Image (cartoon, rainbow, N blue to C red; front, side, top):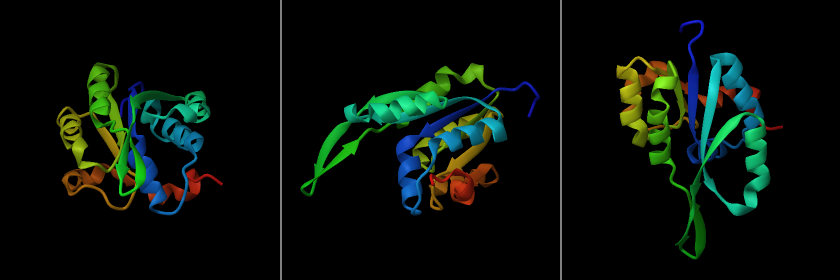
Length: 163
Protein backbone atom coordinates (compact mmCIF):
# COMPACT_ATOMS: atom_id res chain seq x y z
CA UNK A 1 0.00 0.00 0.00
CA UNK A 2 1.26 3.49 -0.81
CA UNK A 3 2.49 5.57 2.10
CA UNK A 4 -0.16 8.31 1.75
CA UNK A 5 -2.98 6.14 0.43
CA UNK A 6 -6.34 6.53 2.07
CA UNK A 7 -8.31 3.56 3.34
CA UNK A 8 -12.04 3.67 4.03
CA UNK A 9 -14.01 1.02 5.93
CA UNK A 10 -17.67 0.20 5.30
CA UNK A 11 -19.45 -1.72 8.07
CA UNK A 12 -22.76 -3.58 7.92
CA UNK A 13 -23.60 -3.16 11.62
CA UNK A 14 -26.38 -5.76 11.69
CA UNK A 15 -24.15 -8.41 10.13
CA UNK A 16 -21.34 -7.45 12.52
CA UNK A 17 -23.54 -7.57 15.64
CA UNK A 18 -25.28 -10.84 14.79
CA UNK A 19 -22.03 -12.51 13.75
CA UNK A 20 -20.22 -11.62 16.95
CA UNK A 21 -23.17 -12.45 19.20
CA UNK A 22 -23.39 -15.88 17.53
CA UNK A 23 -19.88 -16.51 18.87
CA UNK A 24 -20.87 -15.50 22.41
CA UNK A 25 -19.04 -12.20 22.85
CA UNK A 26 -19.63 -8.47 22.53
CA UNK A 27 -17.57 -6.07 20.43
CA UNK A 28 -16.05 -2.95 21.94
CA UNK A 29 -16.77 -0.51 19.12
CA UNK A 30 -14.17 1.96 20.39
CA UNK A 31 -11.44 -0.70 20.30
CA UNK A 32 -12.56 -1.81 16.85
CA UNK A 33 -12.37 1.74 15.46
CA UNK A 34 -8.91 2.16 16.99
CA UNK A 35 -7.82 -1.20 15.56
CA UNK A 36 -8.90 -0.16 12.05
CA UNK A 37 -7.16 3.19 12.45
CA UNK A 38 -3.83 1.80 13.70
CA UNK A 39 -3.59 -1.53 11.86
CA UNK A 40 -4.88 -0.41 8.44
CA UNK A 41 -4.62 3.39 8.63
CA UNK A 42 -8.37 3.69 8.03
CA UNK A 43 -9.17 7.35 7.46
CA UNK A 44 -12.98 7.10 7.41
CA UNK A 45 -15.14 4.38 8.93
CA UNK A 46 -18.74 4.30 7.75
CA UNK A 47 -21.14 2.39 9.98
CA UNK A 48 -24.47 1.52 8.35
CA UNK A 49 -27.06 1.07 11.05
CA UNK A 50 -30.83 0.91 11.47
CA UNK A 51 -32.13 3.93 13.38
CA UNK A 52 -34.10 3.21 16.56
CA UNK A 53 -35.24 6.36 18.45
CA UNK A 54 -34.29 5.05 21.92
CA UNK A 55 -30.66 4.37 20.95
CA UNK A 56 -29.44 7.98 20.77
CA UNK A 57 -26.84 7.43 23.51
CA UNK A 58 -25.31 4.58 21.47
CA UNK A 59 -25.26 6.66 18.28
CA UNK A 60 -23.61 9.59 20.09
CA UNK A 61 -20.95 7.23 21.47
CA UNK A 62 -20.27 5.67 18.06
CA UNK A 63 -19.81 9.10 16.50
CA UNK A 64 -17.58 10.24 19.38
CA UNK A 65 -15.12 7.37 18.74
CA UNK A 66 -14.90 8.17 15.05
CA UNK A 67 -17.63 6.33 13.16
CA UNK A 68 -19.56 8.11 10.43
CA UNK A 69 -23.03 6.73 11.07
CA UNK A 70 -25.34 6.29 8.11
CA UNK A 71 -28.81 5.68 9.49
CA UNK A 72 -31.49 3.63 7.82
CA UNK A 73 -35.14 3.78 8.93
CA UNK A 74 -36.19 0.52 10.55
CA UNK A 75 -39.31 -1.56 10.14
CA UNK A 76 -41.00 -3.56 12.87
CA UNK A 77 -42.03 -6.92 11.46
CA UNK A 78 -44.24 -9.33 13.38
CA UNK A 79 -42.86 -12.86 13.23
CA UNK A 80 -44.69 -15.55 15.23
CA UNK A 81 -45.94 -13.21 18.00
CA UNK A 82 -42.50 -11.59 18.21
CA UNK A 83 -41.57 -8.14 16.90
CA UNK A 84 -38.37 -8.13 14.84
CA UNK A 85 -36.74 -4.81 13.97
CA UNK A 86 -35.24 -4.72 10.47
CA UNK A 87 -33.02 -2.05 8.99
CA UNK A 88 -31.64 -3.43 5.73
CA UNK A 89 -28.54 -1.35 4.98
CA UNK A 90 -27.07 -3.23 2.01
CA UNK A 91 -28.10 -0.79 -0.72
CA UNK A 92 -27.02 2.20 1.39
CA UNK A 93 -23.57 0.69 1.95
CA UNK A 94 -23.04 0.01 -1.75
CA UNK A 95 -24.31 3.48 -2.69
CA UNK A 96 -21.97 5.26 -0.25
CA UNK A 97 -19.03 3.08 -1.28
CA UNK A 98 -19.58 4.20 -4.87
CA UNK A 99 -20.22 7.88 -4.00
CA UNK A 100 -16.89 7.92 -2.14
CA UNK A 101 -15.07 5.72 -4.68
CA UNK A 102 -12.67 8.40 -5.95
CA UNK A 103 -11.75 9.49 -2.40
CA UNK A 104 -10.11 6.26 -1.22
CA UNK A 105 -7.27 4.11 -2.53
CA UNK A 106 -8.27 0.93 -0.66
CA UNK A 107 -11.44 -0.33 1.00
CA UNK A 108 -12.35 -2.67 3.81
CA UNK A 109 -15.82 -4.14 4.17
CA UNK A 110 -17.04 -5.64 7.44
CA UNK A 111 -19.64 -8.22 6.49
CA UNK A 112 -19.87 -11.82 5.43
CA UNK A 113 -22.97 -11.18 3.35
CA UNK A 114 -22.95 -12.40 -0.25
CA UNK A 115 -25.18 -9.47 -1.21
CA UNK A 116 -21.98 -7.42 -1.31
CA UNK A 117 -20.33 -9.70 -3.88
CA UNK A 118 -20.78 -7.22 -6.75
CA UNK A 119 -19.17 -4.40 -4.74
CA UNK A 120 -16.29 -6.59 -3.53
CA UNK A 121 -15.72 -7.92 -7.04
CA UNK A 122 -15.68 -4.38 -8.44
CA UNK A 123 -13.18 -3.23 -5.79
CA UNK A 124 -11.03 -6.27 -6.58
CA UNK A 125 -11.06 -5.55 -10.34
CA UNK A 126 -10.11 -1.92 -9.68
CA UNK A 127 -7.35 -2.84 -7.22
CA UNK A 128 -9.15 -1.27 -4.27
CA UNK A 129 -10.05 -4.30 -2.15
CA UNK A 130 -7.88 -4.41 0.97
CA UNK A 131 -9.84 -6.73 3.28
CA UNK A 132 -13.15 -8.38 3.98
CA UNK A 133 -13.59 -8.67 7.73
CA UNK A 134 -16.12 -11.39 8.38
CA UNK A 135 -18.06 -11.17 11.65
CA UNK A 136 -18.47 -14.92 12.05
CA UNK A 137 -16.78 -18.13 10.96
CA UNK A 138 -19.56 -18.63 8.43
CA UNK A 139 -19.74 -16.30 5.47
CA UNK A 140 -21.21 -16.44 1.99
CA UNK A 141 -19.59 -18.99 -0.31
CA UNK A 142 -19.55 -16.23 -2.95
CA UNK A 143 -16.73 -14.58 -0.97
CA UNK A 144 -14.45 -17.65 -1.03
CA UNK A 145 -12.98 -16.32 -4.26
CA UNK A 146 -11.40 -13.58 -2.13
CA UNK A 147 -10.08 -15.84 0.65
CA UNK A 148 -6.68 -14.13 0.75
CA UNK A 149 -8.45 -10.86 1.65
CA UNK A 150 -10.62 -12.35 4.41
CA UNK A 151 -9.97 -11.72 8.08
CA UNK A 152 -12.21 -13.50 10.57
CA UNK A 153 -12.97 -11.12 13.41
CA UNK A 154 -13.20 -14.03 15.87
CA UNK A 155 -9.41 -14.28 15.69
CA UNK A 156 -9.28 -10.76 17.17
CA UNK A 157 -11.66 -11.50 20.05
CA UNK A 158 -9.16 -10.85 22.85
CA UNK A 159 -8.15 -7.50 21.35
CA UNK A 160 -11.65 -6.29 20.51
CA UNK A 161 -14.12 -7.73 23.00
CA UNK A 162 -15.98 -5.60 25.48
CA UNK A 163 -14.90 -6.45 29.00
